[in-house]
Amino acid sequence: MKFILGIKAGMTQVFDEQGTCRAVTILKVEPARVSQVKTLASDGYSAVQIASGTQKDHRLSKAEKGHFGTGAKAVKEFRVEAEATTLDKGATLTAEVFNAGDKVAVSAVSKGKGFQGVVKRHNFGGGRRSHGQKHSEREPGSIGSTGFMRVIKGTRMAGRMGNDTTTVKNLTVVAVNPKENLLLVAGAVPGRKGTLVEVRGL
Picture 1: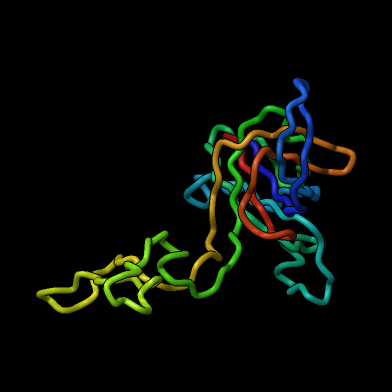
Picture 2: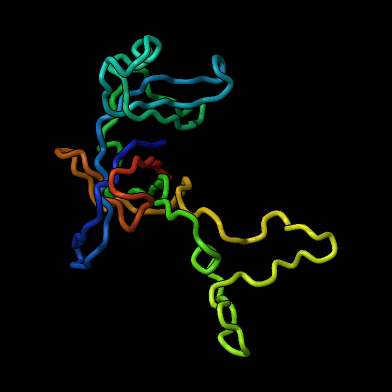
């Protein structure tokens, strides 16, 4: 299984071999090192923990210095099959783990939009603009709490929107630039510029 951590750097356009213009997201991939390999025997499940970036010494505890060495700005764990774990602790992962044409899933924290109403949050149509209804254009309307007189769990209402971990699957790696450690992924991925993203091969 292929995986890497990256930073969303923005979007641009590239032309493929057929001359078609494609929108791509630029992911800046810093070389990541394998900080721990978990096994069924020692941890009860198989996973690979990778650390990306470096951190100043005074920001690290003794335990973190012992575990990561130089420290890390981002640490993520990826589940793997027990027999597919070929990485050893200390190995380095770069953008070259992926090739152009690979299918990937990208996970990141989406943009936070604050407290939003039902029209924006759930695509409600709002109230009617006639028959004396003066201020009901964006109201939720009845929430159906008859009989037991309480709000049913899961009712779509106004609330905080965004700032959730979101995964977009089946994206295509358009190009890999090992010199600048860049991945160009077709389409849009969650988050703002500077968001940490997880890229996993499918």
